[in-house]
Length: 190
Length: 269
Image (tube, rainbow over all chains, first blue to last red; front, top):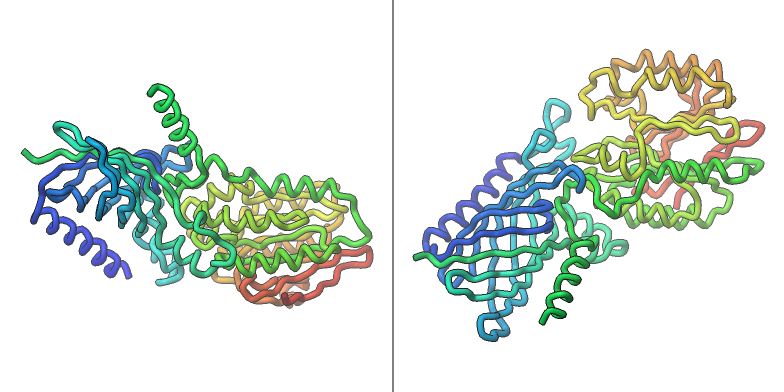
């Protein structure tokens, strides 16, 4: 199972990198609050010419006070399919799907549970690696040198979805989706 | 314009204080987590007026089966004879904060007090911190009607079988001293004959049970983990052994403690 997960993770990354190299036109800098990838997270990314396909690599942390200490890295793919309103420099992209994989770094988390302590498949899931899906809604402001993208993002992950699936009568969508707020700066390549 | 900016700031602060903002599925606590519920429930048990008989509903291993945990809550709520509920551990599956919150919010719908034991699944990820914060310490006792209830961590495998779990020093201290009780009820997740118990500690543990039982008779030895409902007298030490079965198997055990001893009912719901 370990190799299966690694393969899946690497194919996502590989697909992402190839896609970027083909049409790399913009660079992204991101800062985000919450959204299941850290109390605060930040990172860099690249987007295609139109800025519609965005790849980011982010690092996030949770301080002890907020339920950590935790460190995690995240690869996120965002697609911005359409805008519905434009007023001068402002435009609104109402719903933009995201998928991301996040990995907790640190000794207390590993890709899979230790086989020293447990038989294979005693605990079958990965404690460190989570797969998330979600969507954000974004306000874009065009500037001279960059586009500023303010977004509110909702996501859920593999563990929550399977739990929800088994307990639909006792759980609501509020148990499934969690939010983050962020800002991205998209810079055109010179 | 200034007013509009002010509204935005207030809106952002409101959103940021909202429960739906998650930092990490593996985070151990958040600002909204329940606080040491076992302790407040124990206080409630101690302060409640004693009746002729004390009735416990024993359940456990609910994992992620919230539908059946809800059915259990309804069933127990409909029985006014039940004084309080004991959950024998594995309240969660992956030790995640959200799983603790989901399960605890269902247990809070009980119209009686409940006490939750620490299970091996509850220790995964940062679950031990979450349990400590939301429910309390992993080893604790209380006395009600001259019965000492002893809850302890017996999840040896999770600590690598290093001879420290269960904490026999603590158990010795709690069970072989004090004069404010006449009987004992012991509750832990992994039973001592199971391969997930630290079997190196088994001889000392059995000796302890023997010593305690001859000083202050053990009314019941309660565990979970095995997901099966059995109530029997153990051939190796003559103790009444209770395994309530998992919530998923829709069974629990009612233990009735009266002046003339204990009896039990196996319940299917």
